[in-house]
Amino acid sequence: MRNHRGILTILLAVALLTTGITIAVFAFLPRLPDPAVADRDGLLQWLVARDLGGESPATREVLVCRLDEEFRSGIDWEATGKRLDGDQRKRVCENVLLLMGPWLKQKTDRYFALPETERTAFLDETVDSIAMWRGVESFRPDPSANNANRESNTRVGGLPATLLNRADEYDGRANPARRQQIDRFVQAVQARWLMRSLGELSPVAQ
Image (cartoon, rainbow, N blue to C red):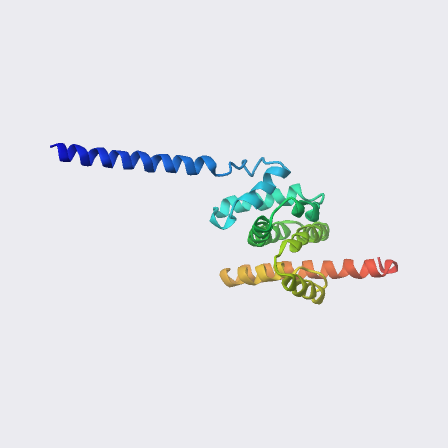
């Protein structure tokens, strides 16, 4: 009987120790704000402190929507990067690349939900949004990757290659009608980007 009591005591101690460790782990995990109502600093915390690959698609959808809204007025990625260490910058870059998928989905849905008369203005907003996200490329740890990406951007009229890559990934998972829709949207963004770029080079053509 004493042996049984001894075994039960050991098992209870192990259980309590395990529970204590679990509580301690969760206590030290960063508590992030609700992305639906988070301010700019709170949204940046999500990019810095959390691997978004482990979050639900719904959370990523909310995050990318809020980030797009909050950063629409611009963000100084260079200044932001100076506040982060190498691992944090890498995580931000990886998270932003991951969010390009739901970002593309949301933009495509919105574009085709608009009447024709409002689509050009939406494309302009999208181009501005891409330009904003492009600043995070400076966080990439491999300088040669940055150079290759800039060269690829130039070949497609300045449209970041990451957007095209995400379009290709979405194409591979979508049904034929959806793939055609995504392709049409990306082509419309490319055309608008190129037209604006030409207009900046030749003011008379505006």
